Length: 318
Image (cartoon, rainbow, N blue to C red; front, side):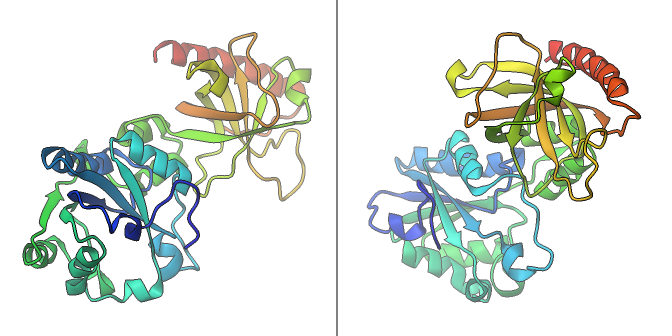
């Protein structure tokens, strides 16, 4: 596995003499359910004067087990690491998911972890956690095998919202449907795009609504359309700027068949701009409308005026 800067392997913690407490999961999006698992690991580590480590997998198991139809991830590995640390975890470790690893008998998995981490004391997982060959291992087996190794296994109950268990797959569904407010509730933070500013064609400026264009190509694409957003720039000390964004293929002005979606953001505050190469984060707050092909650029400009007014009203409440 080729680790990015800041990534670690479990073996990097082998020599740690202090107590280690793991939280294990894919953690795509690090939603409220994941955060509950992470809190349990952090609590166990704090009470034991130890270290909490989030153990996740790369590539995503689906890329290995069904490469013809892999899961479209909510966030990339680097953002996942940041979100895990923001949740209070001390360290993040990536385990390489391979065909060989997927064939490990479930009963051997706790021993595998203990062999890698001799000072391992506890493991926190979701109550529906499955592991081992054929995913036949469950929490009951984990607790039984773990207890023989002196490991405390903490199964964390699923977090529900409106009587529905939270999951990354449900959040993906909400994003594809444009239900961004619901997705944000489940994530526990606003869904966001992060990318480098690139030069555009200047069409927005010609219509009086200059835009920032982000180089952003997520695996899981949210619904194409217009959103009320807030943009954050590194040089503004984290202050966010209200805006209206279009994520789409620009059908009114683009006529090719293979136009890739682009995220364009018009800021609602004058005097703030970015330069090509700047890193910008754009938080999505509410879906305004789907992308539409207008009969003319003039009609598009009129509709953008309405979009701007709606975004101002929406963001004034947040």
